Length: 195
Image (cartoon, rainbow, N blue to C red; front, side, top):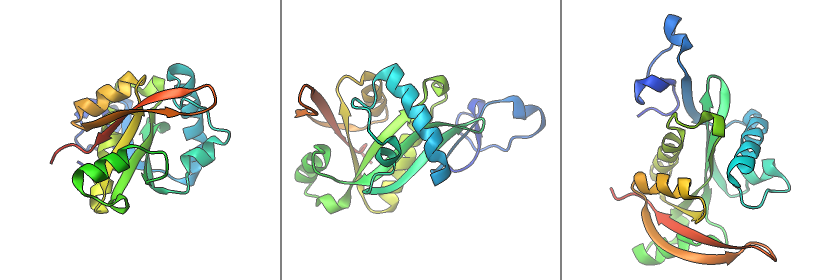
């Protein structure tokens, strides 16, 4: 599947050019994120935080949170010319559970693992398959780089967990972490879908 081109919502994911009467259909893209997208990403993220509570702790600097130093690549979903979602692929950092568990289980060094993170779709853009498209793009990009993708998700984010499981991501473990003086969270960790 070509992720960096236009597809219509009614196309079922096949590439399509939009012209004439078809221009009235919703046009969706998944493309590499550009710096000019960051403000729109923060606006979408704020909507997600208000609607779903993600991220659990609102970052002091949301742009820096999205453009984290360990970032390998990031993509945005675009619906009718507006940023509708986001996903990132990053190198492993301290505090992430999935890389260590997957690495130990599979005999893989953490340098060969990438973390899929910062996934969100604006509430108004849901139902267009963006979550699956963004996840597929991040997974494909990790594989292109010779990396094994993994992820951690807060257990209360049942919609994200359902998406990962529907896409075939493999459950690794459940752990508890302290994310502040008064906040303890339960995390589910996942490894990549079986090939």
